[in-house]
Length: 381
Image (cartoon, rainbow, N blue to C red; front, side):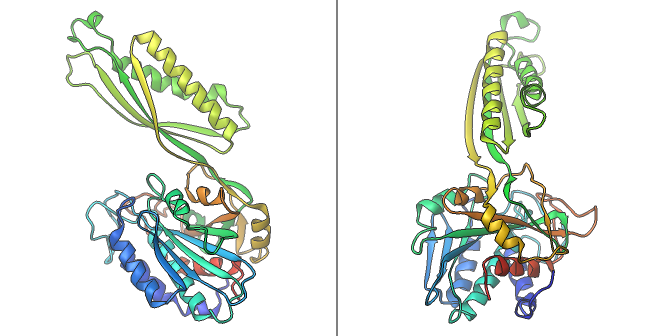
């Protein structure tokens, strides 16, 4: 991507910020160390408004003299419970936590964008709102920020987000109109049976057998209940149960996630899951409890914002992204105002470590691409 000179001059600053932030990851809403670092940096830029917004989120506002509109730039703040394996000199100093999803880079990009906006504040033609959001990886920090007024005073007209993306070549921007990331719903299932001695199985109701059939039954939801031209995923990622090798299992706990792009498909998945649970309960004489701890709507890009943004990139810089089943609570911002979410490529080979890996790292030249992307799509001149 062609990078303007003003952005190139920020490379050392971007690297410093990214590495400083990489050392201090926080988890979910517990990002106070990261918050203080961001607040110190933003305070020095003297924005027109700066506040803690929601639960450890940050909102910084730069006002234009005669604004044509208000644009928001969002960066996520939280790390993951992933032990770092990069071997970097700037590795996480918070044991068991790592920025394994590139949020350190996202924050550095947004900070430098804020710096450039600050330096040009006498000539900017629109208001800029910078939002730093916690808990993207867990229960979702966007909604608490929205409820705390993140998109008000001034009223945001459009919002932009990005993700450093190891599934796209370095130097490329991936964009598309419509759905780009899936609707997500996590679920917990608790199966309660009746224990007995393993040598007298007739005296118990085996929750483990019921759980095994449940897991296999769930695999038929997508293959037998969803139109092959539609897309859905149901995954059971954790199963825990049993106390001893000679005891009929009384309780099993399962954790899973479901994904779809269309709300109607998600409703079908949920309906079939509940029907299977009901059948398992009757078949094996067990009780099946069900709970949804969190869920996000699909990330759906506004068509007009996409079309306007796409004109800012030539054919060698941008490609139409394929949608992914990963989820992002940037979608909650999009439920309030039009939004555009894009991918910034960091892949240099087929061996580029994936997101959420303890080995995840990236060529820091991609940070320049991220800043350039935000400046172009927000119309910064």
